Length: 489
Image 1 (cartoon, rainbow, N blue to C red):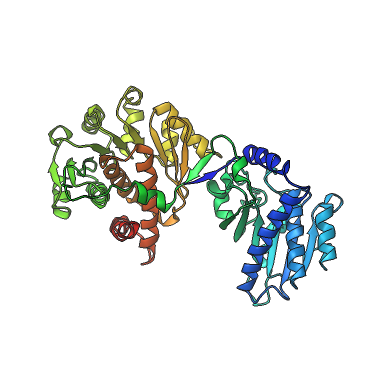
Image 2 (tube, rainbow, N blue to C red):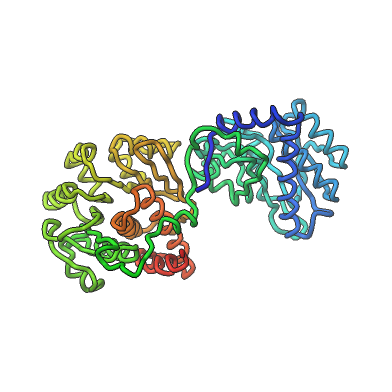
């Protein structure tokens, strides 16, 4: 997993590293890495020589990074102009280097550019861009390069204007982001939360991490970790010559109803795609489940299902007394449990939440934002990582807070973020598939936080796979899990 660090930790690490280096050496490292990435991007647009580069430089170190990078590009033949947002406070050495390399300072941005370097505000900025800078950022999309296409926008460390520690993006009265929208962000030394969570992650575009020697100086625990494919592959249960259906794990699925049989079918499909050897279904959608999944052992009640290593409960279950009784039966089982959809409603309306905190076996809950609000009395807000961790601590459960960048929080304060999310998963029934897959991973023996992280990662990949064929439905996502899992190993 890739660690993600808060601003205070990055600042402390930078201070420790700079104390061992000659003055300005750390900025030169960062600028060289930034210029290298910009040169590669310009290479795809006709080369560095003759390219038009606009540097937007604020008053801080990010402005200095951008100016020094501009100087590198000017020495390679690029026509570099710099617009200083605070002319009297621009980084003096960076500005001198740019001018010495042939770069020019302008009072207004040129009409055209092949590449724009966003060095307006760095990790110390708060509250979004000021009006003039926001208007400038909004105008970047209109600048065209030599080939007639839109200029490539490269953010220095983070897109200017985002809330670095939370990923929140302030909006104007018209609903526009008060931040730069980048095509590429070149991050120095460490990933920051705004690059991986919240609406800011979308504004960051493609993120490239440049090593500036910071890693040995980063102390304590990271704010969160980004799930990678090698993690999921390493956690995946291995089959051996002695494996059989029971040793691979048995997952119980208590979902769906006569009103919502599709939820049962989809959650069972997710469970069947996972690593377990057997799926037991319990519910009133038994007939439809068996018609579409004949390998499943199906009964009408949780009490009659037999032994399982984990339960999935809630998707399409309903919220009546019979449904509440099934949820109570699931919670009484001494095995890990996934609670989704109607099970979360029953926790609130049926006043069953107190049963969770005294439960010995692990629990994973999978709310989207509105379900989170039902559980907590308020929406997740600007800091989704903190929100997930608060709910995890209160419920003594692993929380999988669904969204474009799904966040997983644990009761002991660890957080993970899934990078594979896609908006195509915002359609009915895809969460049922996710819940079933998650239950299968729990039944196969994965720790709750690993099961949640792996399920979110694979579910996102399946959404992307399904989207290749056009509009996506939940059955498409369930079907796409199989080729995704085939490529995992």
